[in-house]
Length: 297
Image 1 (tube, rainbow, N blue to C red):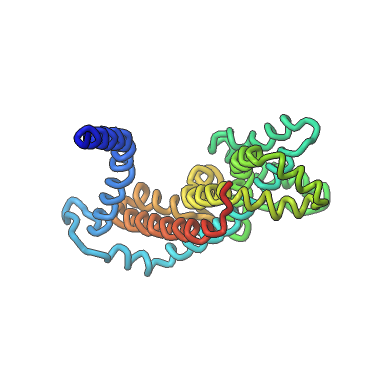
Image 2 (image 1 turned 120 degrees about the horizontal axis):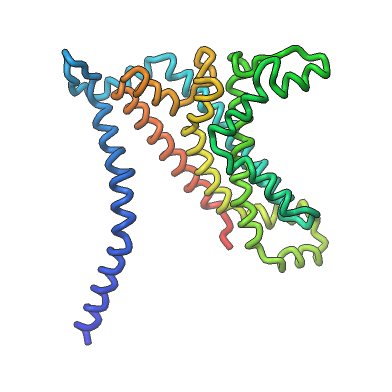
């Protein structure tokens, strides 16, 4: 009897490892190994034909910290993330609440909100290029009706980054809305009926019942929004190429520029490791801090 129990446990263990193996292989090949290889590459100098690369330890990291461009790009990305993440989430939540309510043409409203999400990144950037073009763009045409002068939205350091921020919010809010909409449809109608019987206002019901139940979805969206905030590169290629004067340059574009424009792979690898480290820390804080305040259904 004991041997049969041990045999069954062994079978269950083998079955579990077989289920885990594909994910472990994929993570190892596409996540763990590239990360380790990138870190190892960041510890060497930039090699040339006459002088091969040498092990220099953390010198590439110190070079980055001493580079004014690095701090400007980091500041740009911090501002970009600090605006796009909360704005996209707030707009997505508002759109989901409205699209989930009993309104006429509800399907049309949901489709209209989700349409920017299905557009390719390059197509969306070209669409907004039509809005931002000085003199010919839609924004300048509308502004001219009210007597405003033409503005080079993408060619001025004061407005270039904000123009990119608006494009990102427009693109991501509809995507995040889908997750909120799916979560809203899992909330039992009994809760709304009980709240109506008690005379609870719609605002109180949303704040005290709906939002706490949406916290798991909010955490998931926040992590995705955080990742998206450091991986933007498509729009920059079309709209600004990081200019003018690096005013709209973000971290991923700066990494690409160092690796493929300046052929400085070690410094690009060092910056990649720094970005990964910051993402891991912020994501861990989000989970540890918000998880205690999350109401799971």
